Length: 338
Image (cartoon, rainbow, N blue to C red; front, side, top):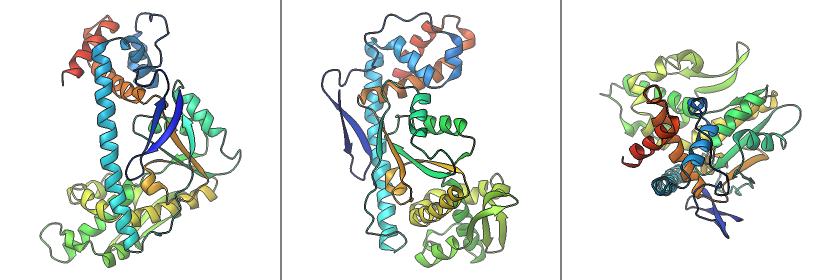
């Protein structure tokens, strides 16, 4: 099967296949009939579970149709996400927060078809520095296994950590909500999200080592706290939680800029920092270690997502059903009917 990586509008990647076999559901058509489905595999709820469910249902027309539907939904959602992120990036470039002359960086393509998450993780790890830290950036269409691969790499590397922009958005939202309170506003006022205010609030965030560990310090508007200390209190309050989407829509540039500096600092200190997500924002994070997970038969992406849904549904009924194979088949019917 020939592999070709195609860009969606906004930069999301999809692996398209050519040649025989493209569009068939799983890659396991030539395998013999499987043995009875082990309950332990269902309980694992990982890539081995998905693989076993695909093997079990690969000839079932209902499963093939469900997998096709799941793939279509994944591509549609990824395109919508790409468009939203690109709009935020364009806004940040217009405001001068992000550079407008960035040359899109190259990503090493990693075809995950027929490979376990462990194998994919090992393949990527082999291309990282043997000693010291670095920043690793992982992108790819939803369903290619980015999150699982990152989890596997984190478990295999003693000095690895993950980075999420979520707490940056929460911290900025806390500052925005606090500003509204101090201005006597009734509730949250989106009009406060001006370029000047956003720049001022972003300057109130500091990333560094505090008490021997890396953390984000929020220091401004009467607040002086470490994110790790208030992650489950201040940053979970309703005034923050319900306004994150509004603030995130306006602060893509500020957060990407902050994240870029933070992960560089961690990498220089000897940590392997793992970032997975979308190219639209991760393109602005400096790193030579960039990988794009692809699938030379994209139908498998839909099959994996369908299998994940079926596996979760089957697990919820496991105690009531001794025959796991029949339970999986029944769960397929339930999921397909929704």
